[in-house]
Image (cartoon, rainbow, N blue to C red; front, top):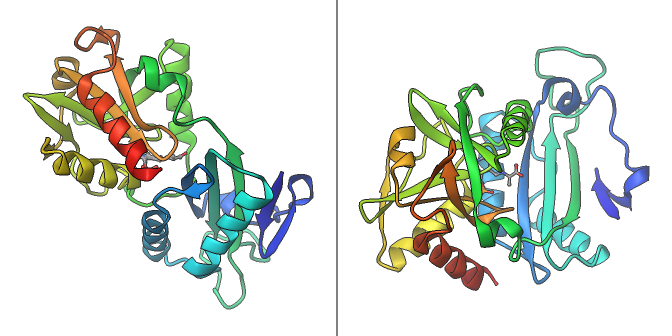
Length: 280
Ligand code: PDD
């Protein structure tokens, strides 16, 4: 596999980053995951807009323009013959001379830019057909979840808790209300409406979320952007999650409680179909 590191396309085992890199020492970095369908980038502009916002919020310089990043994405798709899968992009504040909590002077430290591809079947993933089950866990992440940082230890722990419980993922809960999944946005369908938490610092502003809500409204489905409780979710008609790597994936049980008849619901199936059609 060819990867990209700081201006060069290199074989993955030749890629190098300093041990003093702040991404490594402080999780001082941001990332994006863009999906690729039929060799084409899905919603690239949306991901770049959010990347810019993440960088701005952290006062982190960008190592490349959006146009340059687009060229790098395209080059990696070509070099790796990527038909369907993901492109991972990470920018960190770089490697200053020493470990120091204080941000280094941007004049003295260049940001680190890394990209790699991952082949993955997204359209025909097993979870799409059968739906996934989720457990609920406390949301113990930091308070700026709207910034897409690489500090993913708690989401990783959440996935492990789900795995140990025999579930597919975990939904995180704060003050009794669902924030989001470990790596996706969470939705329920109740009272004939699609309900998903409103945007704020508590969740990541999903690029897939924005597209799916737009498609839902265009299809005359009602959308209610508000918090929902675990109790409301367990009593809902259906549920689903969205992300660049899951598109729309149905959720069929929460904490062992089956939703509806325990199979993917009609709203989730329809939205997935629309999403794949529109993005192809
Ligand atoms: N995760 N919420 C969280 C916490 C996420 O990590 C993600 C994405 C999303 C969905 O955002 P989007 O629709 O823009 O992918 C919501 C990516 C896929 C990941 O970490 O692999």
